[in-house]
Image 1 (cartoon, rainbow, N blue to C red):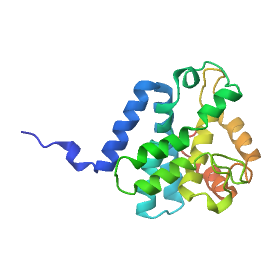
Image 2: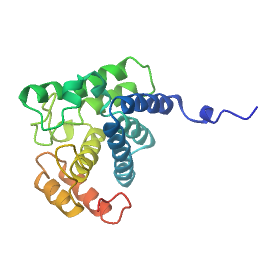
Image 3: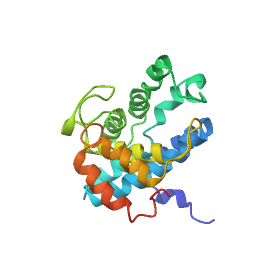
Image 4: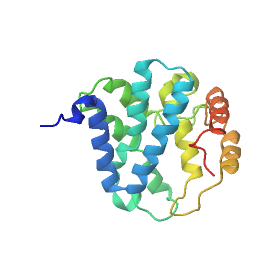
Length: 201
């Protein structure tokens, strides 16, 4: 009998991929977005010389940063246009939902992964959600995911707007440097993405 190649994949990554697949069954667009965010976050985390443990946490948290959307009602998750205030209030619960999902799984570094997911929509100036923490109080893994998430969210097509070209995306993100995004991480990302195969057109 041939060896089971899955046995060579750490259980945490197998569970993360299973959950990501489940999310993809619910929303294909979110699954594809998460895959791109993983690639961008891994690139930035490696360049920032995170420790091996931090890189593992980053990879799993990036893979599952939107897993809380499993608990978001269809009328919000699949809304074909921009959300109204009530819809946004529901959508903004997904980081906390994601942390709760992670807390039940007993995975390696589950607490760190859960916190990274909870805080990936915090802003560097303290105006994000759910906890309105600021600066380096935001876990570095969350700040990296926020950078990757923001780039992909602007650069790729949404149901209510077309994809934005790379130069437009970077102009938009530069305006958020120091407000939404960690300025040091933005500068590092800006240098990396220019010569990366992950760069948008």
